[in-house]
Image 1 (tube, rainbow over the protein chains, first blue to last red):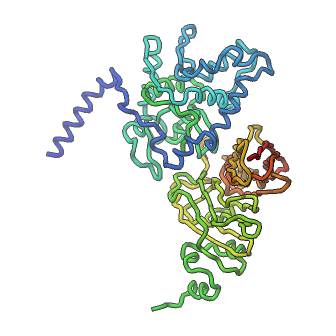
Image 2 (cartoon, each protein chain N blue to C red):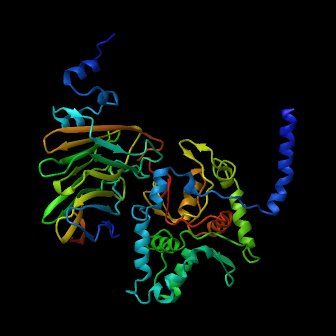
Length: 256
Length: 147
Length: 109
């Protein structure tokens, strides 16, 4: 009896799989990584003095208004009107027909409008600027709408999310969708949302970007990571953001 | 029936409180600090999470009951971490100007261990407290495969 | 030392004998000297080993730190308000470098 039941369940799963692929379902009531933290770490994230991520928020604010090498970011952009800016990235660049994330947008501004050199994705300056801008959006709700232009990139991001990779042969979904809430050694697996990044991770003892986290995850399943800022990671970033629709921005979050 | 073990013999002969010994012996570091004085286990408190989900950063607050006046104050507080490569994490020097003997910081714990606080007071008395902290992921297990 | 500014919270004003909470945090790796890099080489020790707080013409609080203090050292303690004047916080590391923050404390009835 049990065998018949499990077989029919399996068949149901197989039959419904193509349907799911055709029309992706949102995570219902997504759970932020915050909810998987211990009480002391939740307290640390909320503490705007003691949360070490705020070092970069502070220096990002200074950099944003730094006019020592020509015009500052703040000369064109009024920070008060930028509270939603991180919610809009990655955005579609019609000319190049690709997605552009916030780091790339910052570099575009630097090179084309500020006559400065582009920054490395994980440089101190880039982390500071993205942490500062992310922090402006703290508390705002993520609400990504997939459009006709962004659909192909969204699909590529989703494909990446469900693809098995590495020597452990695991996809993102195996851990963060099918096993969220279960234990992996001493830790509880989270749903893997991106709403806290750039985030201060205790294991890094530093603030790091979402793409650094992607690399960390890829290496954890013994897969060759992609470059920070690669097309693969930017499409995944877009898909993940959509997957976390309804969550609020927590930058700079505290994570294990 | 009392069985004479090496540990019991040591406890009785050195006069150190039993509870402190049984909660995991830190031996020389604590002994050096106490330096033969009587160790009181009251009037000192350690506030920290009993389970640390990461040993890289564990919040700790140590408080000592003291009026903090010129004639009666806490001179020093030490935090001892016997399970770490270096047993003394920090020493704080206080003065009557401190007003209140309560200090917070964040420490590293390499593994599950009994964290101790030892306070030295202006009247030359010593107080000690200890709490067992379970560490699920220890410090110093740096991300070997990244960067 | 990292050029990020230390984070400090000191009350701007206090009443005489009021016990003020001082919160501090500095950006520093607190490299223990026990870790190895991917090539198996020891990463040299680099820690903040001393912190001082001077106020009203005297050293009111001092800390001697070891590698058991977490990266980006956080420290909060108390100081009794006695007179108007500067409070000087100094972090020293084991490479002879230091960072300092001076804040004015106003003490009035």
